[in-house]
Length: 258
Image (cartoon, rainbow, N blue to C red; front, side, top):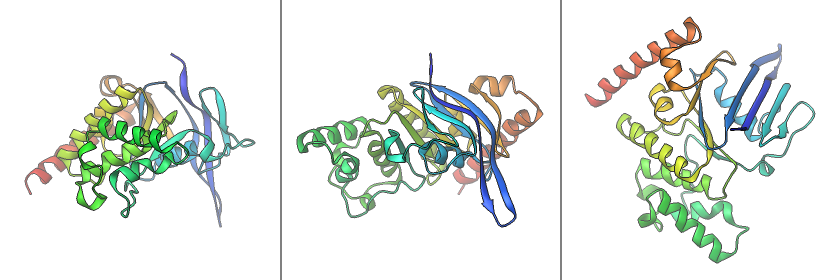
């Protein structure tokens, strides 16, 4: 199966008073159509910067980003974010508090005729199981429901690629784990290709077909969840997986004991 998303020896750096500060270094990965990828790593490893580069918010210093075989970012070519057919779901959901659930989902569909827009909104809310709260406002629904509204809004324009930035970080442990499985099921039902970033190993293993363990702007291993557990590429990956698994177990015990 050909890759829908390709990152080809990608490098990115920020200008600082002391010179260039490398953020991404020679990063390469491929994600086939219909698959869910995840960038997993600690804060500061560069994973969110990868999403921002794919979305068109950060210019690259070297390498290329290709979507469905077309270069959308390189040092000499930069397709505008609004022309990339890339949807993004932000960490804080970014729902408009003065708009109803239905109006939030319809926000990116203004070019459609009214009847088609209404049909698409109904379809998306049914998909995420929220048709019954269409006329509610964000503050009137739970955090998990807000997350699903944000997902419906991101999917409504039918993007070629969906980006999710720490989508479950604001939720408690039980809700986070349940919604990770729900989001995977929704994306598999629609056939969307998606890539998310998280520092939470449980989320990554629950939702992703391919996971990239990141450190210092590089991918240490891009592989299936099974292979990361059973065939780590090096000591760093093995220790990272083991350490994060223990940390998440402690977090679960703490939260459930509160």
